[in-house]
Amino acid sequence: MAWWPMVLALVVAAVAICVLMGVVLLISLRARNWSIIDTFWGLGFVVVAITSYLLSIGDGDSGRRLVALLVPAIWGLRLAGYVHWRNHGKPEDPRYTALMRRRTGALLPYVVRTIFWAQGWVMWVVAIPITVAMFEDAPVNSVTWIGVGLAAVGLFFEAVGDIQLSRFRADPANAGKIMDRGLWSWTRHPNYFGDLCVMFSFWLIACGTWFGVLTVFAPIVMTRMLIMTTGLRMLERRLAKTRGADYVAYAARTSVLIPRPPRRVSTKDH
Image (cartoon, rainbow, N blue to C red; front, side, top):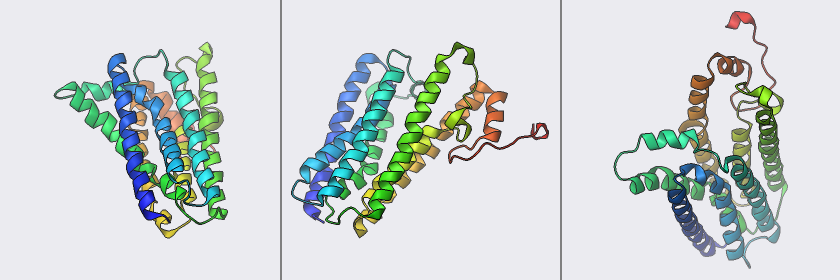
């Protein structure tokens, strides 16, 4: 492990994320749409992967470095492209509208603290395994390939789930209905499940040294954020409120996160 080059790469990754967040802040201020940051979430990991790959030239195992570059790059670029296509020309995401309604004090300090700093530091922490993997001398092994396989599972759930939901929403006959088909019949949040698979895959790819194993805190931080803070719990409350009994029935038969076959729910359960 090349320790000092790795520390430098972590610092450069932090600076790169700050620059990216600054650019997104300017774009968001101009558009008055704070959900634009969602498009750049995946791109942040691409930036970290590329900068870490370039800074690790001459250090680390070349095969592991390539895997640590390609996995976040493929995932991040697909996610950014899809979110941009989905949100372009649409109103601001209700999560950010609700966040802005709770604003106190001046606009700029509030959005920096609650949106850009909040997401920027999480992005840096979650991406630490990517940087660490770049500087590990251990060659690609079975654990690395398990990580690649887990990333493929995550990418499948995200991409297929997005396609299925887009097609469902494009059909006027489905207006006001709950999407409960395909992957959405196995989990209410295939996107979040896919995200967590990818985040844990970053960690597995970094498990070439004992230090890489210790970076397990990174996907744990992401798991907590997705489930407890800004993701699943908030979305579940909003859907239960806006969709009412239909969503309650859907939730009763469908796993909230980990995919499983839908439960059989009798009328006595309601």
